[in-house]
Image 1 (tube, rainbow, N blue to C red):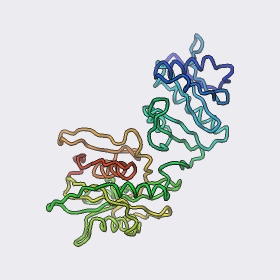
Image 2: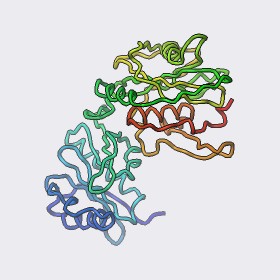
Image 3: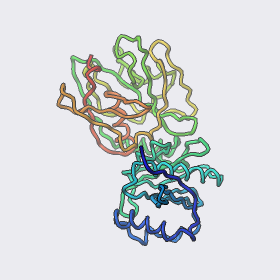
Image 4: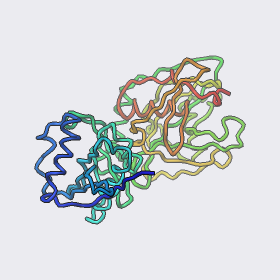
Length: 361
């Protein structure tokens, strides 16, 4: 049973500047080596400041602080080392969001140190761009939508012509590796980029019907075996139409990723396609139990991908922690390469990633 209590309150900077500044010097300057000139930027007098206090029978001690700027940026969140992981940071964040809501702000922005991105993501913040360096440390811009609309206005993940052009350029530069195996069937899957209700760019993911003979109940991309005389690209477009009722044209194709050889006897060609922002998706009731529009921004989470070893293989098993579950290879490998090649323009290869044993059949 703990012998302390933490509470957070808004405080006046002019009255509390000395103790708040001392705490920030302790955490940011002494511990993290941040230049004091960057830490104390002159904006403190016009910010809302929060103080987290530890209350005991002997009095109270300042253990944390944060500030909210007029433009909705929440920052300078600092908790003394002995009190980290004990609730002070969560309380400061919650009160910061409440203050922003009281001020009528629609969004709250944080420049989270990359090591703390998981903390914010787990509390409803979404990534808004790649890593960058600030005050000598790696950071991520992250947004919280108080109005419930997750649509970062300047986000690299907004579904629209700028993102389409970017993906197309990256795919044009990418050199996919093809694979031929006479003993395995050719297949095509679609990595279809659609919009959700908030205008975010998403890829289409399905949950297969549990009663299916092969891979029932598993997460999958729309796709399947190529018919006789059909290319994997044509198969991907056909399956996209049959499984989720999404029509596509040849010029919707942005490119293909590496062929992926599965344990279950297929060589999969992943096809990246762009869909209109008003695309309507309808599941094939025989094969598809559910359709999900997964924001590309979720692939920027610091825990994507997750790799682990298994006794049955010397290759690392890849999974993606999204939708409250874990997506495994081959789907996880293909989606990860979508992020690497199409979104970021990297030549990352994924055929060396293993599938879980239950998918080997």
